Length: 252
Figure 1 (tube, rainbow, N blue to C red):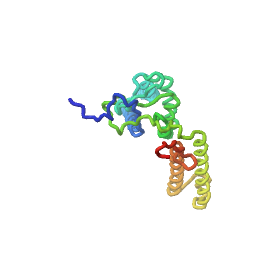
Figure 2 (figure 1 turned 90 degrees about the vertical axis):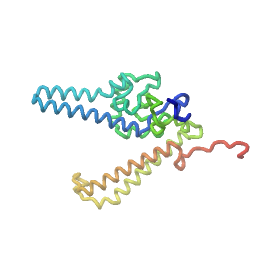
Figure 3 (figure 1 turned 45 degrees about the vertical axis):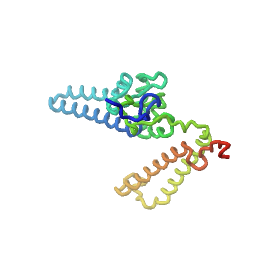
Figure 4 (figure 1 turned 30 degrees about the horizontal axis):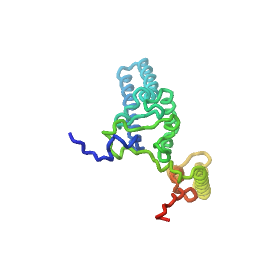
């Protein structure tokens, strides 16, 4: 069978392929479904057999299995079921192999605690690493390049390591933007405080409309913060922009 892929998609010489956020999200959904099916299966067996002892045993087993599911599979095989079906693999940056069990546990705990916020740094790191990847010095890469489509992965973001990217100043200016954004949202919240009932503000007994408004404000604040972080890190915010590359004699 002849190879119909173009040279750009060849797995030979264009470096590691790092899984995109959407691909990793799909893997997480699959893993969630696997655990959910195991949980429902255990509940069904316990109800069918009507055994309290069996129910307790199954419940304990499911809890342990849920805690160890990702760490064990990642440490032993490099992939959970979701990773494998999405053609992904967790790689230790030092060895190029699987991460050890301790790192796998730490990685899973951080991901559970931070949730989707852990993935924000994927847009600002050279190798598209989430916070739990950075903490364990690991990356999530394509397992089999021949089976991957271009929209499944990214290559290293070499532009982020360019000397034209400011470092300390960029971080400082980005931090000031985050403070400014938070200040604006707080001021806006105080300005519309009269629109909410005292029961909502003091006793946390809000109407449906008030809950929707508060949720929308909170979500908007988080989205703006994330956008500011990404733009600042990439050097697109005023005051934190990339410095211009030196021009050639022909361009001068």
